[in-house]
Every structure is written in C-alpha cells, then in structure tokens.
Image 1 (cartoon, rainbow, N blue to C red):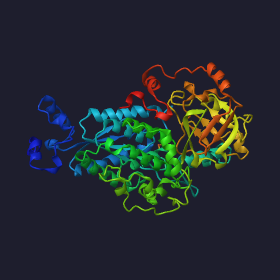
Image 2 (cartoon, rainbow, N blue to C red; image 1 turned 180 degrees about the vertical axis):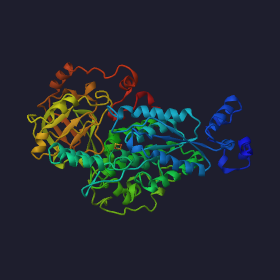
Image 3 (cartoon, rainbow, N blue to C red; image 1 turned 30 degrees about the horizontal axis):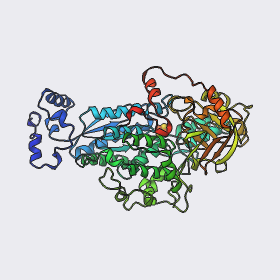
Image 4 (cartoon, rainbow, N blue to C red; image 1 turned 90 degrees about the horizontal axis):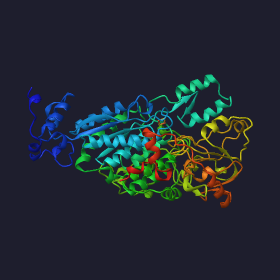
Length: 582
Ligand code: FES
C-alpha cells in the first residue's frame, strides 16, 4: 500500500525532471496544498477524506466543475451526467476534477423572476471560484440565466474557464405536428383560451411539448446565450447546439475536460478571450440567429465585468449590417435540433465569417477563424443563404425617442411587418395584475390599432425585470381574428415569444421614466425602420405630468431584495449591480 503512504515524488522534484504536466506556474491550488504550515497538511488530509490517494497532490491541476444541476431546474437536470463526462476528460489530461454546486435558476419555477437572481448566481459563481483551490473551472449551464450568470462570475474571477452548455431538448410532437417548447406553447394557449383546443387536447400537449431534458428547443434565451458563449470563444467549437440527449453532448463534455487542463499553462483566462472584438462577434451572431432580446442585457452585463462598455448603439449598428439567417422559431420555422443537423453554430459562423473578427482567441487556443475551419451549412432552408435571409437586418432593433430616452428594443424579425410603422392610441395598464384582470374582458375598450402600454415591470418596478412584456392578446380581438398588436412595456420578454412587442423601455416607469407619464388615449408613434418610439404629447404637458409623478413604494426593505433594489442598474446598462464593475 505504498501508494497510500507515499507520494510519487515532490511536486518541485517532478517538475524539475521535466514532466510537462507539472509545470509550476499558474497554479493557484499550490497555495492551498503545497504550503509547509499546518493547513497545507490539513487541506490535503481533508481532501483525502473524499477517497483520493496521496499522489493526487503531485502537481496535478485542480479543475472546478461549476454545476448548475438542480431538480428545481428541469432544463439542467442532466448536468450531472455531463459533469461525469467532463471528469473523464480532466483525469485523462492529468488534472483533478472537483465538482461543486451553485444556486441554479429554473426559468419555469422561480418567482417573481429568475432575473432577480441572475446577479446573485453570478456572485455565487465568482466567489466559489475565488475562495477555493481551483486552477481552472468548467461551467455547466443551460437554462436562460445560468449561462450569463456563470460567464459574469467567471469573468470577474478570471481564472481559465470553459463552458459546457447542456444543450437544447428534442422537439416535441403532437398529433403529427412538431412542437417547439415556449413558442408553440404560447401559440397553442391562445387557441385553448378561445376554445379551439379542448381540455383533453391541452393535457396531451402538456405531456409532449417538453419531452426530454435540456433547455427550450427554440432560439429562446437559453439557445441564444449558449450559442453566444460559443461565439465569444468560451466553448469548444460546435458545443452549444448539440441536443441534450445526444451522445455527442457527453463526448464534447469529455473533450472540454481535456481542453481546460491545457488552458492553464496557456493562461487562457476569460479576460483574454472575451475582448471587445469577441463581444462584437457575439452581437453579430445574435443578429444572425434572430436571438433573444434578453441577450442584449446579458452581453452588456458580461462585458461590464471585464470593463468593456457595450452600448445599445453597438447592437443597432451591427443589426443594420447583419442579416438574420437562422430560420429557427420564434423568428423562423425550425427548431434547435434542425439547426444542429444543419451544421449548428459553426455553419452559421461560416456563412457570416466576413462580418466577424476572425482573429479572436478561443478556449482551443486557436482563433475563431481557425475554429470555423471547413464547417459548411448542410441545409439552406435552416441556415439561409445571405441573399435569401429570414430577415434582411438583424433580429433586434434598438429604438429611442421621448418615450425611451435611454432606449428600448424590439425583436423585429418576430414582429408583424405591417405594424413596424404604426400610430395608435394608448391603453394603459398600471400593473401586470391590472392587465391580467382586464385583458379577457369583453368590454375592454381596445381595437386592432390600440397600443397596449404596461408599466411598473422594470428592474425595480416589478421587481427584478420579469418576462411580462409579451402582454397576451385581448380575447375579444383574438375572437375577431386579430393575432398581433403593438405592445410596449419596461419588462423583458421570453426569448421564445413573438409579436410586435417593444421591451426594456429605459429609464423604467418606477423611477419616473416617460413610460410613467403615458395616459390612456395618448397617441404613440412606433417607427422601427427609423428606430423611433415617440409619445405624441407636448413637452409642456409632459412636464406637468412629471410634477405629479409619485414613485411606487419599494417591494423590499430588507435582505437580498433590498440589495437588488439599491444597486441594480437599468436595462441599457445590463442590470448588473453597480458595485460589481471592476
Ligand atoms: Fe429553461 Fe426555457 S425554461 S430554457
């Protein structure tokens, strides 16, 4: 049992013999395990209580596996299997993998919204990395907020990090119709609300629309953010879009475990990978994918952790020169599984490679251009050619005007084209509760031209900036065959949603933004081609209304909620806490 009693040699001794896996630089874990004082011994002894032999400390790099697995987050339920595959790779490359949990954010369950807790998870990730004897970290994510939270935390901790998303779920199927979780659910719900789908049918749909683990199967926020992690260079090429149950998901997890060990000696930290040019690549890919509006907020927040200031103008500039080519719901027709089979993100990158900074370094140690290599789209219907795009510009447009002095966004690729230039009278809901109480009323005084306005749904007002912006269509209009109308709020919207919906109005109404001043009957102008959102009321009248504005009482006076309200920034600044910038 010598192996239990002796190490195979001192760390320094083996390194001096030229073992390439034991180069001494860049090892934070040494400070924990290789110190001569009592706690060096104690830390080794306590780690051996997990069943490791003595030679586990022979200079092997310690790799944290940051796992957002939780039974309260169905999208990430398979991440323990993914972690096991990562561990195989880490061991094979000469590292020691240690898996640890953080808070997980399950989109379907958390109230009032996961966005309230994105920054909490980011802090959890950052401090878990910083406080522990880790030389590098593998980030396992999936559901919407888990990806940006991990990237924010890893960016601030800034040790070598690689991301392994869990991948999208498989397509649902109901009576011969393929279903995309999220987007199709909302469409079918309108049919159920209006009696065109029976209770029994609705129950059947419930059982098959989300039939596997993995995140939502359309280009919602989860698919968008994991794809953007790949575009940023933080995953292995081709990793983001592999479906969750596909065996290749585990294979690439193992390869990621091998890759992260090499990243230590190469000093491939997030700050070297996520540069301004890498973020510009991510914005370009966001537009080409017709990705979620939530990505605007998240990318600004991640970049902010590295001292990079992204503005809404950056997004609009890129949007005007990037066609939306991914024909995936909600902007298009297909599902994530189809995108993967068509070549996945590498094929999308290939098709827009001249719009990208090809020389950005990635977790492979190679550049974006080198990683694209010979990737080719295999289906021109799913990944459209540039001369036949899903939408001629990027999926997202940035609006401004006296109703949104600091900006607002709209997913123009998922809106009704006849409503992109629209002038109509406002009908105002003071709160979401009021909207829910009235929206199905037969005497709601609205018609197809009305502009629905809902306020007190922003970062402080809701609180937490929930996905309430997709105001349901009034039932009386659905019954008349109207399926879309202009809707405006300071909320976010699920990336799986669609419609002519203006979001993220900043500053928000709860802090006195102009949305707080709109009255029912006011005229509103939406002009997406001109990027304009205007309240057609005189400046003098708006001044009078401003004098009368009384902010709502804060939702929290203690605890994390109080911290959030005191420090969250507005949508155009990414909604991070002001004290987390470098
Ligand atoms: Fe988790 Fe949609 S609910 S990604």
